[in-house]
Length: 130
Image 1 (cartoon, rainbow, N blue to C red):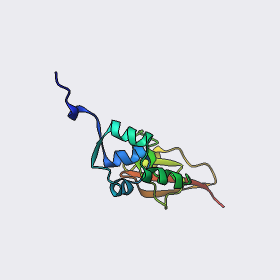
Image 2 (image 1 turned 135 degrees about the vertical axis):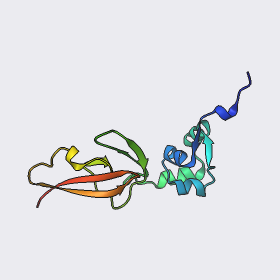
Image 3 (image 1 turned 30 degrees about the vertical axis):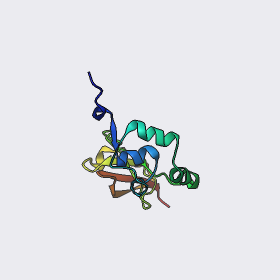
């Protein structure tokens, strides 16, 4: 039986960017093709080219490139690029869940809601009243 190289697992550019912890724009700008074999990505990660080594050296680590969003209620998850306007969420839930499905906010705390988190989530922030 012949070895069929097309059966090797491949990653799309976004998945490659996630694996290398870089923005997709940087991946495209530096010649990452639209699909790559997982072994090639592992090789780049282990032996980064100059542009990736420089990016890693410049990273402060203060702000993540990617975050995992996971619904508190149903455990659906996705990996997304965090936005500057995202506060620290108390809960992340899918758009179709109701807030009544969450535990009540503690007495003296108020609840704020942020739409448009990831592709299908709302972020919920509980904060203490002043």
